[in-house]
Image (cartoon, rainbow, N blue to C red; front, side, top):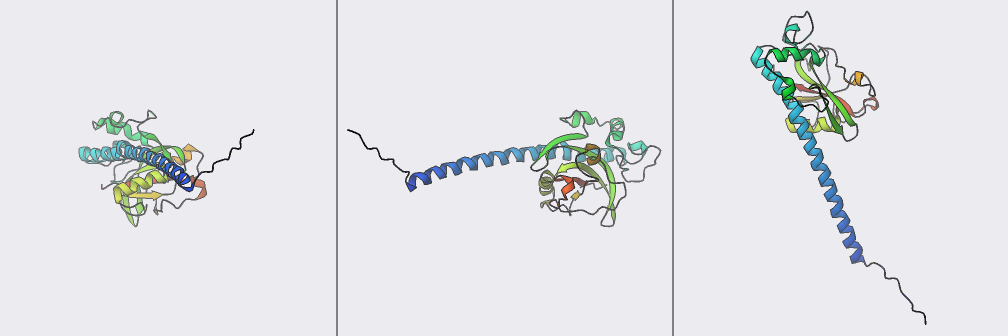
Length: 224
């Protein structure tokens, strides 16, 4: 005699319980991801961005001169200091820092064995090699010395802008957004400064032309 087996369907309560469990799991995964991302941003800001700002300020305090301003301060060969960063390649400043008693390689622990570079992962841009430069620009009619973090993912810079200025607008405060010079796909272009003394117009972080691959130059304006 054959037995008839009836398939038992899930009840609404059982389905609801499963959906709640799935929701909890997804929420935990997202929270963990956010914590990891937040930790990465905090570390990048502390050990690279803020550390370089401290170095530039320390040099000014010790030498009464602006870092990267004229040959004596690691700027353009043959140029005399005029109070503004020359916009030379970052590596030309290393000797000036060493001569002032600031050992950059001990203060900046780069994952690329070069204190002027550090990698960071962007949400859309992926892994980027960020390079620091030293330059001055005319912003809103005023000449400003700035640390330039070239080829930085928009979301990372936006978070740093929020930490420092309280809002991620990119156009006000001490952290400003500037379009990269040239196109992406070529590191030598992505790590190119705008010419010293150029008139720079800050932009919104989310103002993303298709050729910049979700990256910008982030300016950290110095007080000297």
